[in-house]
Image (cartoon, rainbow, N blue to C red; front, side, top):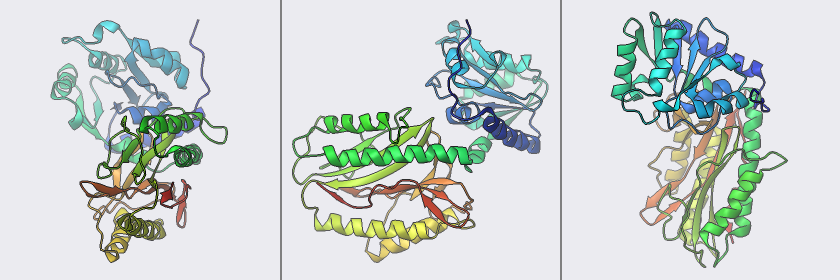
Length: 390
């Protein structure tokens, strides 16, 4: 019996549109086959979101073939058949004896497939080949000695930056889940409550979803409470919330791999004058940054608008102000920071991440996920931009 097909995240025509854009880029680079390793790019081109990238797997895009070929571990092949539009013959499962084998591994199966597809004497692009382990890159060069091996770079990442209307619809669903989780946090964070118990309630919302759309996976959650508000990326602890505690929370709803990040700050009891001052400055800075978002502006323009406003309050943010967001949270392309001259285009999406870690024992968090529109900005997340006093 063949694996049944699941309900796809997007229609096949959407994936064909994405593949067409990648193939056009390949043609400009004179690449006959592009080997895609990055899990988010595989998801972008196929819909596959199962968690199997801890072992070798790759998508081989052939300029001459309509569908790509997905090579992955045998136990994960049924998930690929279930989640993607790929024909059965375009999912290649390699044997279990290639796992934890120091002599021959899944990369050999990928190379075998490149030979079988007829690319051993052609130009083969390896996605971000500089990031591959030296032994892996050498294996490709040795076993494809007659091919011209080139660096495929981040071409798929950059193509992903401009979202389709279908992608934006999914990101709005993810944003609604993010908002619901923030509001649930405001309900459950109380003195005497364990951090873990509050997080359990928040996770429940992230999974149950919002507006009838469930969360299909969990993104990383950071909860940094007093006295740890100077930290940025730690998880909850077995500690309890107390009167006077400050809590910085970062989370994101997730739909079909797409994320919408959001950060908010909470205070149990009256916030300190310092926290109030930082909150006022950050909200004004956030609004100033959003006000300059439009096609033709740059990432640097957005960051500079925030920085100028913050300076008027006598404050400074050392870390970047945000980054492109979409599949699996961060897209490794543009950053909202001074000097990044990436030009904003309609339907690019960013996490305007204004977390500010000022001292070892003090920080603050606020953020929004937004879309560049034809004339300005659409903020996808909508939880109140307030300092939540509980």
